[in-house]
Amino acid sequence: ALSKRILRDWGMLRRFMIALCRSDHLDKVSVHAVLVDVFNTFQSALYQIELNYPRYTKWIEAPPSATAIKDKVIVTSAFLGHSELQTKLVEVLHAKSNLHWRYKFMVIGTLATMLRDDVAVPMAVWDALLDGLISDISHLRKLCFRAV
Image (tube, rainbow, N blue to C red):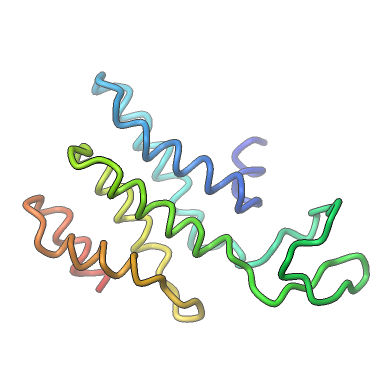
């Protein structure tokens, strides 16, 4: 039930993915393995998630991008959940110079998964992917090469 709730709500998904990517301070290999498995489960859902506010959302106050209300559903001119998550992930990548390679791989993998034809990609994402092309980590280089 919790995983379905997270996957239907961009705000919760953003917080969850960022928390997973920031958990690199844990030292036990078994903990790393479990976190990577959980991350992979949620990352695969990014292929199917809609780029709009969930229909079940009940607004106390309409978002700034609201343009109209039709049948109690707010129509917005722009949904920013997708680009906000991308931007936050790039911030996680640059926040620590000694970020563990598995977590760099998780962040870059998510950024690569989130590339879509119908959504403009922030320049910071392209910078992160291009930086990954010259990484010392071969897995990261291969992933960035496929993404670019």
